[in-house]
Amino acid sequence: MRKKVIAANWKMYKTPDQAREFFREFLPLVKDHDRDEIVVCPTYLCIDAAVNSVNGSCVAVGAQDLHWEKEGAFTGEINAAMLAAVGTTHVIIGHSERRQHFGETDDTVNLKLKSALEAGLAPIVCVGEVLEEREAGLTDDVLRRQCLRAFYAISAKKASKMVVAYEPVWAIGTGKTATPQMAADAHTIIRGEAAKAFGQEFSDGVRILYGGSVKPQNAKALMSEAEIDGALVGGASLDPKSFAAIVRY
Ligand code: PEP
Image 1 (cartoon, rainbow, N blue to C red):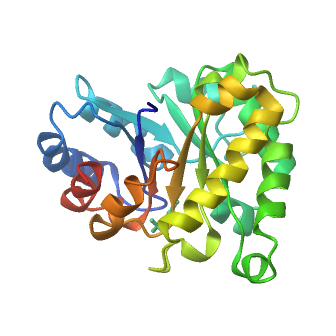
Image 2 (image 1 turned 135 degrees about the vertical axis):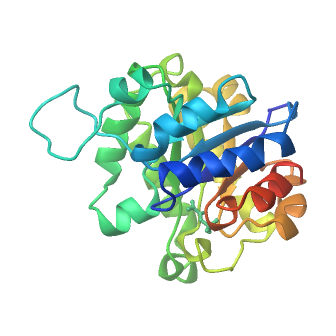
Image 3 (image 1 turned 60 degrees about the vertical axis):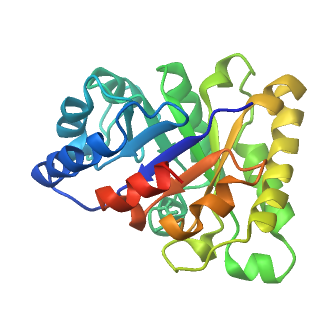
């Protein structure tokens, strides 16, 4: 039985004070919750506030991106070792908003994945098709390509902490949600690519999350699907009550 991961992506929202305020309300609502892993990914600026707030609780803190180099002249960037040094345990890689607005490619996803694993972080690798690709019947091909290139030249041993998130781009922040069956079909494709890259045993154990307008109202139906191993939640994770309701689906 794979333990589910419920992860929050706060995108570019909240100041450190607002992050602290969130955790003051959220932590009592999920006290002693050990059925699922809970991860909150704030902006870099709020990581310190988040790490201090969750200390001693069941909640982990992740970042939303990283640079793959160990150090250098890369203005504005943060690397994996820096994230680990401030108490971050997870990192989102290849989110569609990074692919769409910031030039993220399948190749940079692969470089970032390798450097996160090297630093001992648990990467949450995002894949998913845009609406035109789904309508053209290309969803499976897109997922296969994204996974093949993300997982390139990484061993199963190194990848052990990796989590994948299937995020159909047309469902992110739109209020549209993939049906549990649509998500399950996509997850089966992703699991198949994980088997090719890392072997059957790895593939049976890797957690594949669904992301795209997950809300308290639809969390239970999605999480009841055997192929869905958790959720990556954007908008509905900003409010402590709403995110707690999703965690406790
Ligand atoms: C996301 O940011 O990864 C996401 C799934 O956003 P939302 O839940 O708002 O669709």
